[in-house]
Length: 276
Length: 174
Image (cartoon, rainbow over the protein chains, first blue to last red):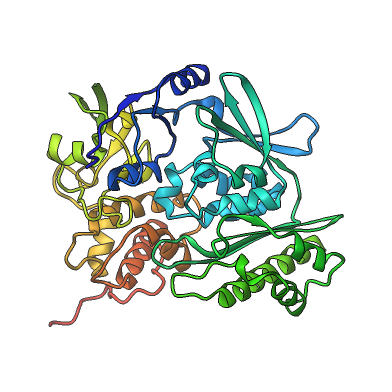
């Protein structure tokens, strides 16, 4: 039972949703609801109006951008659909793997790409995949549409009154991978890492072990040119400041730094194998 | 709010508050108490129902948000004559229930897996176990549930189930 009271609206189009969100104090977007509803239930979050956008078909599905270099994935694509999407599996395999590692089948059946990216404060899995992929987050407000690099989006909070409409992901082929060590009870990552191997070197992002999803430029610099041997990757992580890793849940910063290194090595080695 | 919902093939019309959860409507409004409430926060999976064919946790869905949808609960799985579904019968034969509290949610969740894989190879044991991550059971340890799913999938494929312990021959007297 949700004890707080709120109003509910189910707009039939994005413009109507944006008008409701900008015109009502305390209005919140309801998409899959798999984080927001339990938070309303426990009192961890509040809302005056829920604007239910779950069935807006215009925010679903995957297409290639006209230049063919990016996938445009609608924000209301469910995690289950994202994990099984042939285009995503072929061109952004780390994103599909991250989607598949979230929660459980029932949560993935309702939870959405947008909700996972915007679930500030929860260590969800998709932000690292989006950061490593150099993806752009597309937002819509009453003033129009804008894009923001996934790394910047993860560093801030979702702008009030705006709706996350899509993720624009560079197509990578097989040169990407995702690895995760999950907390057994919550399925949230103790540590999750996503990597992409680009002509300019590896792109590496880590979450769970760090205070928020972070791109690790120092590690990338140390590994540029390879090799991606486990020893080299662990050494690259040992050179990071210890404060980067936040101990808790029975772990130390040293353990989390090591775990991040091990998972990143696995991901890099898998992506490299898939490339050759 | 006036809401229309199709539950187990029957149209239902009622008025609901915006903060009502689907599980509350099913149990308290429609008397379908086969759907259980365990944790009420989306962790235990005993409230799983099918929403437009997909298994979901009915404590993580607003009734208002489900308006217009097709909802299937455990009451709709058993035939009117009380005959168990193939999955339920296989779970019974493999002793896949003990106290039974998690069973309705498991049947509704696993029903989607069985349906989704019906036209291809049977799901593997790791796939079945992964599919069960949303359902907590504190009695069986899942082994017998996994065997039940394997038996159900084998029965529709005319095969001997992998890992079955229950003999199809005459059972020994106990």
